[in-house]
Length: 321
Ligand code: Q46
Ligand code: ZN
Ligand code: ZN
Image 1 (cartoon, rainbow, N blue to C red):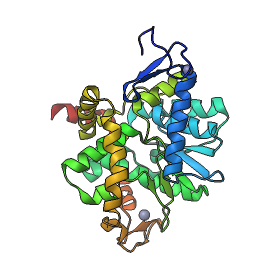
Image 2 (cartoon, protein in one colour):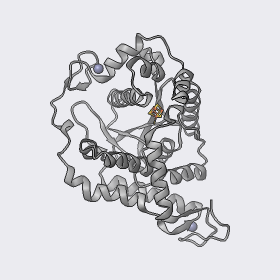
Image 3 (cartoon, helix red, strand yellow):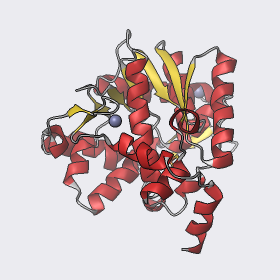
């Protein structure tokens, strides 16, 4: 990760990582300290968590979600995990193993929900049945199940592992389209309202390289493989573009996203039409929605009636496009 002669900025011991955007190298101990400080700073600046919150962390088995769960427990929060079995072939089976092993080894509680077992469908089938791209069907499912699991379990906050790279890439996409509606809602904290739990993103000040390094230093085994459905996703192209800029000009990514939060987000407050719609209860599941039936129940209706679609079928289709 780093040239062997480099020394930690704080203690001058041999460094294990260089962080060009901080123009410094760090040893393991002071790297972890920097990560904790960045998370604490985000939590405090945006009033994400209180000491007495009951926290539910959405975990996928990947580096970000396991790192944020680990950090919050280490910082003294009461935090349980939530794993959603999306039914994306082998990827989902392996990701579940990582999430379970993490929880088991640390004596933590993992709530599990399986789309196939509990709702009779999986993401590839929902994608085919609703003619949506897999990530759209997946997103509708995850958002609904995050909300319902948090409310059912009496959790006060739902945490996701979105990091600086994720948020900067989403911001980049929203800016390229000047999508004011999405820009106005791209905040690291969404307050609880009308049957939705509070949702927060404590990793917004850490890059994915840093969360991966956190896991390595802390001995956390995580699933390195990305979801096979992400191939060809625009999000990955935006990340690559931002990485190229970051390489030339370290710190650009943080300036872009954190600068947006400081300078632009306040100007957009109140510009989201979604905040204005009156919500009523879904006639099937009771979740808040603008229509009669919520998007999740409409998706389940069609996906559960469809014969199961193996993930390989969608991947083959993706390759031949
Ligand atoms: S899990 Fe789901 Fe992601 Fe896979 S299908 Fe897309 S949204 S890429 S975070
Ligand atoms: Zn040090
Ligand atoms: Zn519903």
